[in-house]
Amino acid sequence: MTTVRTTDYHTAGEPFRIVDTTTGGLPPVPGDTVAERCATAIGPGGSGTMPRRSALDDVRRLLVQEPRGHAGMYGGFVVPPDDDGAHLGVLFWHKDGYSTACGHGTMALGAWAVDTGRVPAPDDGDAQVRIDVPSGRVTATVHRSGGRTTGVTFRNVPARVAARKVPVATTLGLAEVDIAHAGACYASVAARDLGLQVTPAALPELVRAGREVRAALATHPATWHPGGPLLSGVYGVVLYEELPDTPFGPHQRNVTVFADGQTDRSPCGSGTSARLALLAEDGRLGAGEDLLHESVTGTVFTGRMLADGVTEVTGTAYRTGEHAFIADPHDALGTGFLL
Image (cartoon, rainbow, N blue to C red; front, side, top):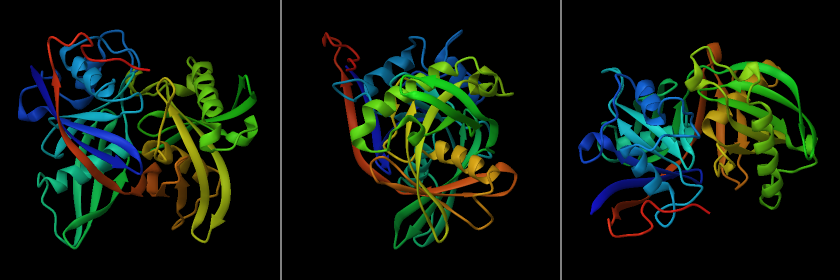
């Protein structure tokens, strides 16, 4: 029998399954940095959606596939940080492989680190959890009141706009796509340009459009990141709609379609960073203003632009369970299946 222990959180509705590889019992990931470990996990010649079959990747598939997981599951392997400047490192994973950034996962990890006592925190006030992710070092500021975690603010690596109004043909019509990098590459599309609204009923068309846009931009030069192939290529497509502004700034609803057709149940943390960079360039997000960013499920993040492309996104993360998953060597299903 192989047993894998996890702690599960959700951040604004999006799951995050935490596996601490630093406590032993799981295969180590070679590499001197989190980015190198991510490249190792993906494998030579691979990409975030085409991982090689390694011992640790068997664990990923065990946890994300049915009957122990599902196609919408997301998680992370906690690994050592790059140096003593961070509390921990993480390799983010989903049903199709690995990703270089994950805002909702960073928020969940911050809450987990404080809730478990890994990072000391006051009963009232804030605690900073520094996390090395494949795209760089990020920070989760965990807000506390009355001895419990009440929210988390994710400070991302700098975001930058790479291209505007790139024409992309889809089966729903021609879309003008904006491209921004925010730890991962995101393409933004106004849902109304495709005759859609961001609603649960429209999800099949939204997912189809997201997959088509991602495929069409596979070789577009704006999706290339100077950091190399690990950070390049469209990871997520943000389909958004405008809502009436609040007294504090813009208000939008989105669904982010990432990897191979997965939908983010939260407003997408790194995707929110990409939206902030675009809104700031448009002059729609000034100093002291916030983006109220809704998800397709109705949950909310609040985002703001700081100096030099740095963004902050605030939301909530709650623990949903602790698990001891078992892989029985006699189980013919092995690591499971996806539907």
